[in-house]
Image 1 (cartoon, helix red, strand yellow):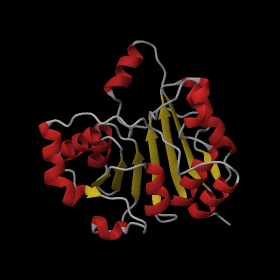
Image 2 (tube, rainbow, N blue to C red):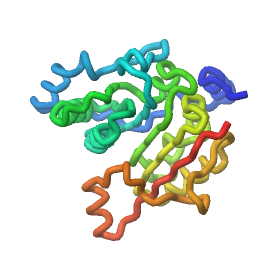
Image 3 (cartoon, rainbow, N blue to C red):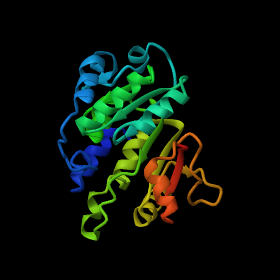
Length: 241
């Protein structure tokens, strides 16, 4: 039987672990540009979602029944908007804690006339725990999360066994976790955590990493890194139970 997110949280806390306190970010309140502030003001009612203690009703939010993709930490939102525009048959939800990124994402979605995207400005762990129903997501994608590269900070990394089980509870059977990082040590950490996680199967034929899927846009940062010989590692794991 799959544990609920509440069970996961209570068990983790009883064992001295933490889920709700995990932070995959350092809160840095950058200054909003006029364009970003205006985009939030114009689009929040139609595109913004707030944290709530009851699960979202995706059918009502999007006005249809469709597969729903959740992206955690979308930065300035360019790749998320690109993916949403390229797959209008799917619903996309982005969670980001930095307001300038939220504003930039809304501005680009507005300019690209993307209507199948909703944006949340809140901690993703609390959103998952409180606001996402079990077995309601077809995909969770986390691209280039903070690697916390110093060894003493590895415990702050978002990708931990307890967090993966929280994602498992929210994914449908057959749903996919898609991770990407440009930090090799974090890639190895992610692979180890996911290989050891019950209820998941690696989508890679060799049980390792996958080539970048066509649906994940190549960022300018990656293009620059490729020219310098830097690597990027993608992982996809499917929920099997």
